[in-house]
Every structure is written in C-alpha cells, then in structure tokens.
Image (cartoon, rainbow, N blue to C red; front, side, top):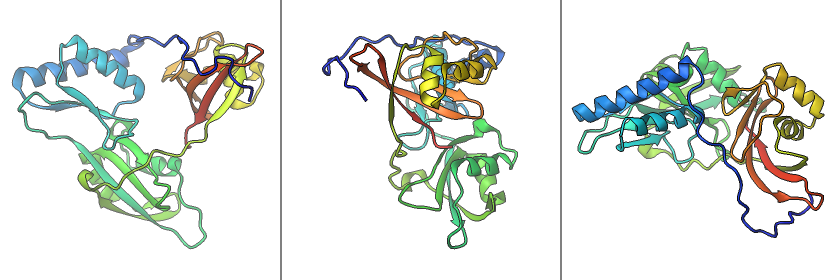
Length: 276
C-alpha cells in the first residue's frame, strides 16, 4: 500500500452526526428508553433495557439526554462488548442488573470442526429467543471449543435448561458469574487497507468486497446494504470513519480508519470483516 502523504499529521475528518429515528420501531425504542429513565428518576429505582445494537445505543443515548437523565451507563458484561444494555441506576438505588453469562463447552469428536459464531447464534435463536435477549457471543482464541454467551437472565436460564447441541456438536452449559469471568481479549481481527477514488458507498464497498463498482452498486440498489443498521439504496451515500456496513449474503465490515491519501490523491481506508 502506498504511504500517506500526510506524514502522520492528524487531519480534520468529517464525522457522521446523529441520525434521528427513521421508522416506527426506532421511535418506539426512544419512547421506551425515555419512559424507563423517567420511572427510574421519579421512583428512585433502577431500570434496564434489553440488549441494544450500536445504532440502538446511539438512539438510547439521545433519548436519555432528552429525558434529562445522567445516572445511566451502557453495559455488555465485559469491557469490549459490542451489544449492550442501557442501565439506568439512580444514586443510592440498589442494583438489579439482568445481565448474565453462560459458558458453553463443546464435546466434539477428535478432529471434528468446532462450531463457529454463526452456529452458536443459530442454535440460540432455535430456542425461540429474541435477538434483543442476547448480547455478545465470545469465542476466546486461547480456549478452543469454549464460548461465552451474554444474555438477559431469563434467557440465560433457558439456555442452561434447553441447549444441548450447537450445529452437530454436543455442548454443556454452565452459568458463569460475571465477577469470575476470565480476561476476554478482543477478537483478533485482520485489518486490511485499500485505496479508493472517493468516500462514496459504492467505491468503498467495491474495495471491501474485491469487486467492481458496478457489482457493488447492484448490491446497494437491490436493497442488500445497510450502513450502521440503516438500509440505503444510494450508491452516492457518503461514508465515514467508524461506519459499519452490513451486506446481506456477503458479511459485515467496519471502516476503522482513514489514514490519509496516496501520492496519487486516492483515499486510503482501513477496515476489517466481522467474524461470521
């Protein structure tokens, strides 16, 4: 990859601003968070949301600000969590967090393939659990065959009672006290760099997917692309550092940095693909 011509200087880069709710589901979420905040503050009792995606977390923060609430935090069970609950805990209130964790240990035959992230998620959804009841699923690199599932307490209890198999692999389920969690290192992600002619959606997706801009545009126009969990059909949509792209059938990518430009004035992007 060509070197940046910025010589390490920190450039002023535009950032994606707050995007207000786009549909009834998002408006309902904000009203729900506001109601939780007002109840917590008026009665001095803790209130908690279900698990929120990064887009939903941004909406929750806006709703909490609108409600004038300052006694809240986002919590996912471990420091690097992506999916989190909004915990609204007034001063001097007891804490009654619904967060729980289940350790899954595979009993795979020698030489058999271990389940991947998608296998765990598919088996958990097969228990008729809603996605908002489930947080992150962490597969520690230093413990093959072990997974930690963060969930709301009722869902964690159901997992322990009902889950016996992930894919074709038998598993055992054990409640894992959060205070006794091992250090869960962030997932080792392979960072890629590419040079694009512009920070337009079609150009960036083409670089991420190693396809032509025409093929990327076809995916966008077919409604198969989301930016930060919001659908878009505009090939001209601008992209920003920190954006997350979901391409149905192709995976999920994060744009982690814009290191600078090449000597030919092409924009360098740094990105990774999420574990499937």
